[in-house]
Length: 478
Ligand code: GLU
Image (cartoon, rainbow, N blue to C red; front, side, top):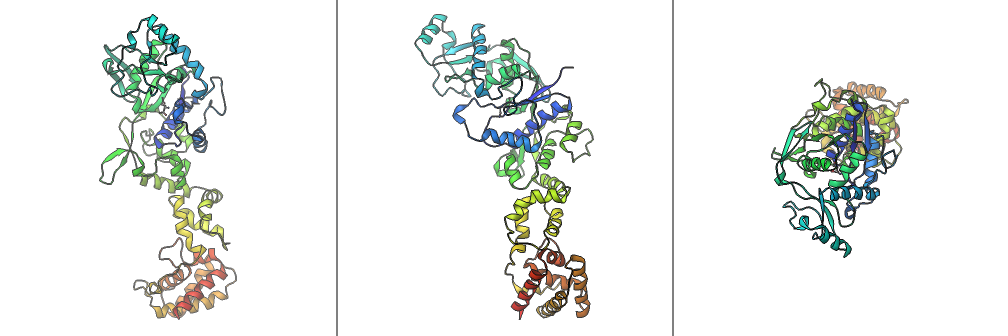
């Protein structure tokens, strides 16, 4: 069996869309599972749309997700260069071959803006005699080179996901291969590059399903074998009304960077999008590291139907990955979010990490959850009185007084001991422990909902700050 060679060939658009990342992932998995090769190629021939820093985003994303490539613009390789803009001179020769064998022609009537319109380009340039062409070239008339497609019959090719695809040749157009600035179009460049780079397996989005028939014709015209094709189904998002449509910003974050910014871990994102359109043989398997994905990935199990991006499922998966981190690793990932709101020294930072880790689904939830550790918010004292917790403003006052007194004598300030002390307060006052916990938790946090209970919070805050908050609350009550 021949060695599988795949590629990821993004255009540097300035962000990595989830769909693109999935293409990269499947392309990578297909190669790695089969002991093949995975190449990165930057498709930047559209010089008008050059975006500074866009390539870096692509490289960073692949690095962060662990999708290592064997050849690429930053690491080189035997088939370089790997930026199409640096390969400009390579393509002309093949355009010339097509001109010579009649599968392409010079077109002198296209405007500078020589993109292909959906209605197709109509002109008589394909019928120009060699003499007329020569005269135009000598006169330095600007031109583009177009593919000459036969309008009769049908073109059929096989796609591994969508099956046999047949396209009426009459619907094909004489697309531009070389633009008036001398740069090739994507349509042309990718075919030349795939061939020269030895790529025999193309994985890309299903938006190319139709135009691939035309690419197949180009391969034939150049006398080359066509690669194997895997066109991936669309990724959809669910709208407010329950309907689905192509995944876009209104559904949520759609770029890798935005998801990371929101606090999704790269490994969770990769795990989730691997399952967006593919399933392992053992359908029960849900959590798969990149290595496990490599082992399990069978491209025959890629689904043809559109996948629906489910943010809740990703969140749930992310929580699992966060919970599975070592405390040190969690610290590294959580720190930027903690530092957004905490600038003071906490008595027990590690205790805070332990409180947080099992309680966050995405890292961006952290600042809001821990703000009260930085500064005690003003809260409505009436909240201290709570029927369910059997507290009143009067017994709250007693609880605070007794708690302050007993806590002042505590030496080793740690959760378990504090917990026992507050239970003592409860029995002294003949109250339920939950009443004491309610009052103390509110008095040290100012929040109805907190990560951790009263004594866990006090452990993080330390003795001085905890007592200070209890006393201040008591003062307000009196
Ligand atoms: N540059 C194209 C894109 O980003 C790649 C399509 C392909 O993989 O052939 O859509």
